[in-house]
Image (cartoon, rainbow, N blue to C red; front, side):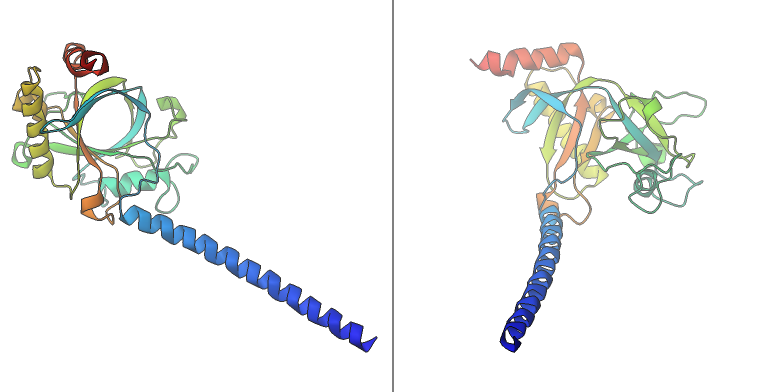
Length: 262
C-alpha cells in the first residue's frame, strides 16, 4: 500500500508540474506572439485594417503609381494648432477611438484603429467659406490649416452610426466615393518631402497625358501614412493621393490599363 501511495504522489506531482509547464508555455507563447507582432510592426508589418479599394491600373515608370477606386468612407478629423485643445490631432483622434484611456465619444465606445492616417492642408481665408473636400495647399505663413483624419472601420458606414465626439475639436466626416492616383514611397514624413513626391507624381501624370499642373496637385494631394512612429523609416509605407476627374481616370485606364496593354 505504501508503494502504491508513493507512486500516486509522484504521478500527482508530475501532473501538477505538467499543468504548470503548460500554463508557463501558454504564457510564453502569448508573449512571443505579442513580441513578434510588435517586432513585425517595427519592420513595416501592417496590422490594422484599411478601407477596401479596387486597383483600376498600375504603372511602373520613373514615378510608379496606381489608380484606385474607393467607396464611401467615414472619417474623424481634427486640425493642427487648435488653441482650444492641448493635444496634437493624432492624440485627439486616438482618444476618440479609445487608444489612449477611456474613449472620448458618447457611449464611450471603443473603435478599432485603421489605416491610413490622412494629413491634408486646407486654405484659410478670412470671411471665405472653404470646402472640406477641396483643400488648397498653402504655406504656414499664408494661414494654411493642416488637418488629420482617421478612417473609421467599415461597420461605420454612415455618419449617424459613428458615436458623437465629446471633444468639440473632433469632427465626424463623410468621405464620398472617389477615384484617384497614388504614389507609394518609404522614409520619414515631412511636409516638404510629401510635397516633393506630389510634384514628381504631377510630372509623371503630365508625361502620361494628364493635364495637371504642380499647383493643381499641391492644392489637392493628401499624405497617407500606414505605420506607427516606431516603424523603421526605411520600412514605412507612405503614399500621396491625388483625386482624379472621370476624364483623367478614364484616360489613364484606357491608355495604360490591362486591356490597353493586351
